[in-house]
Each structure stands twice: as C-alpha cells, then as structure tokens.
Length: 241
Image (tube, rainbow, N blue to C red):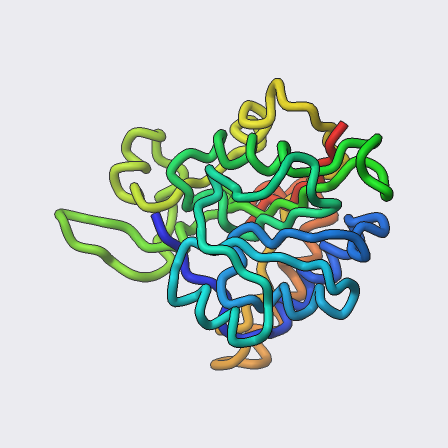
C-alpha cells in the first residue's frame, strides 16, 4: 500500500504548511516527527523552526534521498515507531495513514510517542493529520480493473459500497468523518480542529493557468460552506491528553 510523496514544493504544499503551522500552537519549535516523510520536503521547512526534527520513512530509496539533505531519517513502518514514549511535541502524518497496513495500530503508535501535558514543555503533543476524504468525487490513486492498474483520477469510485470500492482500490483507503472518529475511539486524545479541504490543482494550473486558478479559487472558497463535504482531504488537529 505504498504511496508516492511530493517531489516538488508548489503552492499546494505551501498552503498546507501554513495550515500545519496554524494548528501547532507553538509546537513547531519543539521536537517533531514527520511520520512518513517521503523525500523530506516538509522536514526541510520544519527545520526553519527547530533543529529537533526527525523523519520516519518506509521506502529505502526515499530514506536515502531525504538523508542526503542532512535530515535525521529512520527506516521503518508506522505501526512500529522506533521511538520512546512521550518523545514528540508534534507529529505530522501527511497523506500517509491510508497507505499503512494497519491504520489503527499506526495511530496508537503516534499517540504513544506524543508528549502528555505533564511530560511536554509545550503541553500535550499534537498530531497534524491529512487523509483522503471519501466524499471527494474522484479516486486520485487510480484503480485496479480486471487485474490491470488504471492510473488517474477515477470518478465516483469512492461513492460505491465499501466492499465494491475496496475491490477497485485495494491499495489505498479513504475516510469519512465517522471512519476517523471510530479509529480514534478510546485513545487518550482530544480533537482540537477538523475540516475538509480542497486541493491547489497545481497540475491543472501548469497546463491551463487561467482555468486552473479559477477552479482553485472557487473550490477553496467552498471550504467555508457545507460543500466542503466534497473536499479532497480531511485536515485534523489532535492533542494528547
């Protein structure tokens, strides 16, 4: 269930970075884990705020690429974080949870390594979480049909009953709000903020600048309305208690 990271820093990543920093409440100056760091794009930006930034990455090639940038990277899986309890003030999980083998186990591990209010100098550690929204009209990771993979944004797949949807896209999950609430149920956390967001549509803008920019403006404006239900991703801020 491997995913591909962001290789180029563009407007979409910059916007998400601003959202991340707005949700940290000062924790960006603490000890940070980028859980599923890819090639280290977000780590590079976090390093402007703290030298205490660590990354975990499953793909050995990505570990090598990020390490060449001088980042502290550990090769491993999200279900088995090689860090001590209550180690981090902030954990970023950016479009990663949908790719792990066991998403509940991965969340339990994140919560385990977050500081409690007593152990953290900045209060309870926070998780910044982005995951795909089931309400988005397109499956952005492609599908498998008759044994063959079909790349692209496939419409309406995520609206199918779960058993049919998962046959077409067994390599990636999507989440409703209820799915996420069930995943977090029983963990020592509180929900600080939740919303759904649309993308920045950088690829469309690169090909058709005027159309793409208009599309981005219109869709991102919907985030302030109930129509954010159809957004590309969930954005959640979670705090350890």
